[in-house]
Image (cartoon, rainbow, N blue to C red):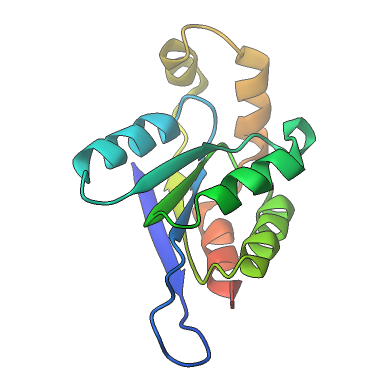
Length: 152
């Protein structure tokens, strides 16, 4: 199962901010993040939802990634689809979002399954990566605290 937490704030005039809700998926490989994002998009056809792949920072072309987000600021919802395990990186990403005028963020947390279930879901691939992620993922409350600290 996964858990959602949203932190929202309004702009200085109390008006509704036209910027999208941004959702960070948080979970290890094969925990269902991309499946959830695609299913959410299908289940809500009236919402204009962008799903943006979000690799770890060391594997991300940062300028291109930020440009993709900027190009989707007119959407209702942006889902940042990736493991997003590094809490410091989430905070850096939130700072970038804040500079773009984003005021609403949510964390969609995916609980980890056993290594064997995750490997089966992932077709037996990336075992070392999944083991590493299982060691690095933090408890849900840690990520939700980051969302609570978001003050646009």
